[in-house]
Length: 364
Image 1 (tube, rainbow, N blue to C red):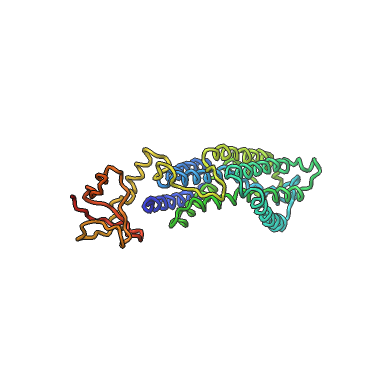
Image 2: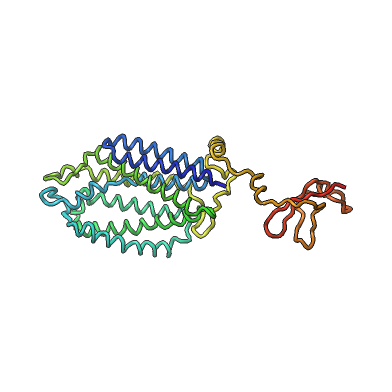
């Protein structure tokens, strides 16, 4: 039913991905942000036009989550690994600790997050699960303000202990978002189009994450956080805590948006992507007419021509050994109560194998 529309959306997303890749090579961070947001709006409109309402809602929600996940990873690397000569007040982590030890802790705590979700949240509705996952992630980001402002040292908390604790919590709470994401995407995949729709959702994630990277880089530049590994660059990190605080605040729009977007169901419940009156598009009205004109669905006549077998030479529909039955019709169509024939020129009957056959019935 949606073959032509999904193909059009696939081509559209391909051009969008190439466009974002080209934006990544631009030096002007402001232009990158503006054009990246414009590309995100076009991608959202594409989902609205070419996919059913529920799929479009969830895809836009995923897109917004990733856009609001502002990335400070570039500045964080220098903050943690600068030497005493480069950043005297810094943590001075070694490459071994920063890359290997932290990665091991995060990977190990993923299993704890999986267990916690399966133990306490698997029967909760999507909205509750996302509320807990996004809310706890936002709290972890606010806690990171302590290390970026160096308040953890004043409180007597070592950098290594504080960083590993936050890494563990971030991995566990992040899994509370990742697991319902995977389950929700699986439920939204129509039969026969599982890989296509799943790829659309994953594409929304990746493109949203790229735009979030653009926004994070622009934010760091505006705050003057541009470390390069040079000597005595302590001032480059003075406003890093502000960037982290804004990243935490950016979690609020997805929290508000999910109230009207996510289905009011649990992960164990089936989601019907076509349960709306207008299943051809999320926008309805004008946008649905655009989609129908751009990529019209197969008409009912074409579908019937493909499935219907016309039987010639039959003067009626048998309701006996052939296993056929008359199509259910209003009582007024069945004539008088004396058993007279149905005064129709054509009726439909099933042959018992799921194929609808049309047969002519003589008028009496």
